[in-house]
Length: 255
Image 1 (cartoon, one colour):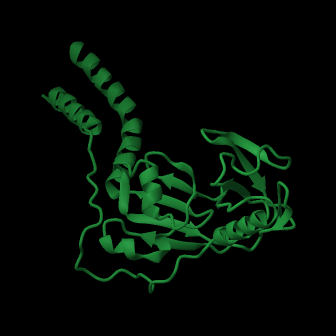
Image 2: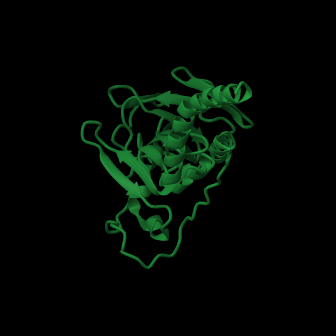
């Protein structure tokens, strides 16, 4: 009888360990509870170009990204309209462009730099140019319980936490949607922002508009933490149960 009880207990433990569970996330609910600690609405910070930034500059009026193949430009790939070229901002804050030469762009916004370059090309070479400028090296780092963690480029302004999570495939089953961290600013004194994705009011929080080098960490939910502890315990206890059951079977056979 004791042998049957022990075997049954072992089977139950193994079955419980093997059971799967799918976490159902509840996102963006209307909540009537305590108000979130959301700062007053402010304009998201606008990025200003820095030395070492990599710029992609395209003349939308031409089939070429700028003025054909030029020195000082690094080719990054092909497109249907021509060759893509990038230009790096030097340490002195200037970028070297075909024909118009060294142009100071550090400290300017993306829009201001595009307008300046457009004006210079219009004055010296091109007829009615329309300049598109992107900063290619801006990124955020996505970690934790997301389906595709890694570095995600910020190719457009006002990219939000929701945009990045969507690009990464969304949350995993183990994610805690109520506890998403955004780590921002100085590495020696970082600012930590907590986002609750279960509350629709989070969408109004201006702090979820992401900035260059933000780190986003999606934490595990409580059940995932418990399951991980149970997994560690089962990994430890299963060999002991196997040895004990084998010894018990041998004892019963020779009794």
